[in-house]
Structure formats: C-alpha cells, structure tokens
Amino acid sequence: MKISRAVIFDMDGVLADTEPIYMGITRDLSASLGVTLSSEQLFSYVGISASRMWSEIQSRFQIQQPLSELIRLEKDCQLQVLGALNQIPEIPGVRPLLEELDQMGTPMAVASSSSREIVELILSKLAIRDFFTATVSGKDVSQGKPAPDIFLKAAAALGVEPGKCVVVEDSPPGVAGAKRAGMVCIGFANANSGKLDLTGADLILNDFSPQSRLKVKELVSDCS
Image (tube, rainbow, N blue to C red; front, top):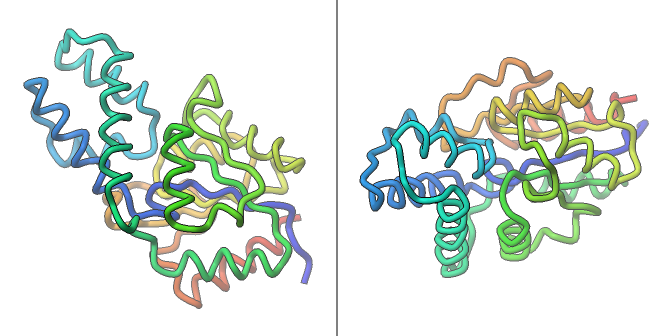
C-alpha cells in the first residue's frame, strides 16, 4: 500500500474531547465580566483563535478590559482546569488510529489554535506526544484558522508539500484553512463540538470506529 507523506491533526475535539471544558471556561469568564453567552454563540467560536474570539466578544459587548488581559485570563483558567484533571477526556478510537498510522510509517503533526502550553499539557496528559513529529500552536502563526498558515507551517515542519497532507478537523474554520492550504481534509463531526457545517471537507466521519479508521487510512494512502 502506498503511504502518503503526512497527517495533520487538530487537537481539541479531534484528539481530546475538550471543547465542553473550554466552553464552560469561556461562559464563566464572560459571566464574570457581565456577559451572557448562549450555547449557539459558544459553538460559533469552536476552532478559532483566542485572539479572534475575545476580540469579537469584546467588541460586541463593549468589554473594557484590554484584549491581552482577556486572552491571559482565559489561558490561565484553561491551564488551571486542565492541570487539575486526573485524566483528559480522549476521543474514542483516536489512539488506535494514531497507532495504525504510526505502523504505516505516516509522519504526523498537531496544528491547534490553542496556546503552546495547552498543546503540550494535553498531549502529555493523553500520553500521545511521541506520535507527533511536530506541533504547531496558535501562537506560532500570525493568522489563525481559517487562514491556512498553521497547516502550512505544520507541513513545512514535517518537510512535506501541502498537497501531500491530510488534515483531520472538527470545525468549519479548520476545514476552510486546510482546504486553503491545498490539503485533503477529513471533517470529524464531534457532537460535543456542536452541529457544525463540515461540508467543505473531502470526507466526514462521525467516529473513529474500525470502519472509519479504515476510511482514513485509505484516504491517507491515496493522497499522492
């Protein structure tokens, strides 16, 4: 079987089932600032950078605190909450997928809008860090998703042409960024990330069951 060059994974909602945790933090932090966010509003922020999210919230609700302070407060809360967890919730079936891709000799990277500290914390707690040759965080690029920058940087870190990469994403901004980077994209429809429009993806999966993992590997091997 012909092996493609690389697979790039989003982290939150794809490797770790952390979106409900983040939404709770954003909701509570917003409430402390006198802002009530609906579930629909919270889901709309899935996959975008903290800078873009808080800039929109700050502008919409006329929050007086500086943007940098809002981003710092959120990151501090995330580190505190995630650090206190004995176990980070893992997406069912993703570990076998990583193991199978690793056995195929497929280089892998993580491209996450989260901060570098959050990325390293989650990958370490999940004990999957060693599967990835490279990790790129939202702070490593000037423009977050849906810009293609983070995926192009991940491909460069792996030494692979963008057209030889397969991306696994759970959000519309992530799917859009992957396609803008010229990559094949698998949309992972995680119910905890919301009922999001992933129709721009080349393949949409609802789980990482053995049948779904086979589809991923077939797509990976056909990426040439």
